[in-house]
Image (tube, rainbow, N blue to C red; front, side):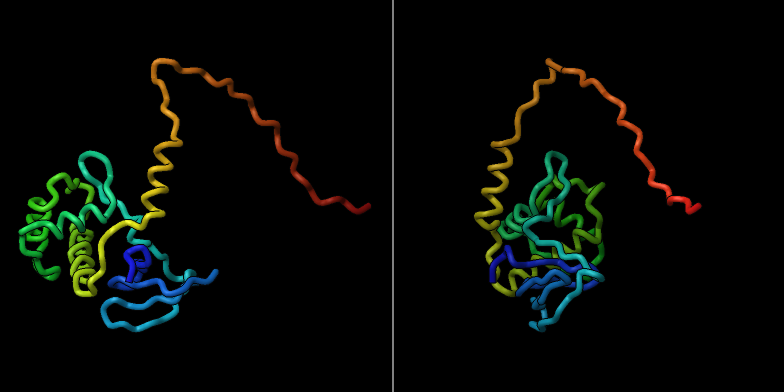
Length: 170
């Protein structure tokens, strides 16, 4: 099972492997109970784990970086059902740069549950090569803007739009 195929589905707890997708939804397999089901995009949204970023006091970081810190930490993983103070204390030790004012307690609990699921299912936590290349290409293509040389753009008013009114019959 590849990390890049894992998704979170709104309204459904846990993590899912995206087996196949269609225009109106996708077939997912639960990491918890291994059941497979179709999930409609009319009712649910999919979030790929590779695309989730976490607020920090510096730049936002990908969820993989948090999971890697959790994996290398010597701290015991708290139970996701415990109080929020112990989970927050855990993340203060494991990843102190996290912005605890903007990362909700429920998100920290979710990260603990997800990390436990990933460990249980022996998922290798790493970004796919395509995701890493997209990020590097984006950085290389993004032009650097000089703040000392600013140009003022002339703003033109848009021409008024014509409104089609129904024709009157005589």
